[in-house]
Length: 117
Length: 120
Image (cartoon, rainbow over all chains, first blue to last red):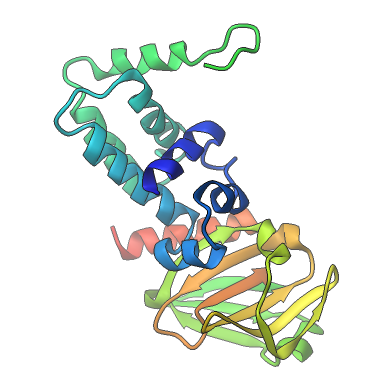
């Protein structure tokens, strides 16, 4: 469920994802989401933590794995200390020159004439 | 319609105007320790609300008062769904508050900032 949430947030962003989007994607009642996570932010942080623990631990994260971290950094990193701490933890596991990897992925995500990456 | 503020260690919800009649409350004071989170959720008004008791529900006009759904007590005070914020609670009489505020994003940001300082 946390992985599904991550892919919704990667597709529509943090602000752009509504609870309706999450209810549809997760096939859960709205009340269950609130009860389990407290808020959209609660779900986002749980999904981010899970993503980092599973994709950034042993194996090298793929380019696609970076997308959720990029969304977190750009949309929430500057105003949410918990998100910033999680992003830093992910960046620490990227090896030397993490800025190069993140920057390269950011540019890779640019579309060409409207095609989706 | 309500205003939300932080007073000391409490979240204070002031119900405004005529809505006090339908909600039977003019003010809710919740310790921040009981607040689990806040979310801007315009879609919640379209969801089923459960059993009304006591309160007022005129679809498209107003949802106000106490509603009982799946064992949870939910406090409502919303006229315009585009302004609805959901505040999730624990260890309180109400499990959830669904209230209309003048600036939903600012209200969510205020509550989240206060929570972050509570749990760094």
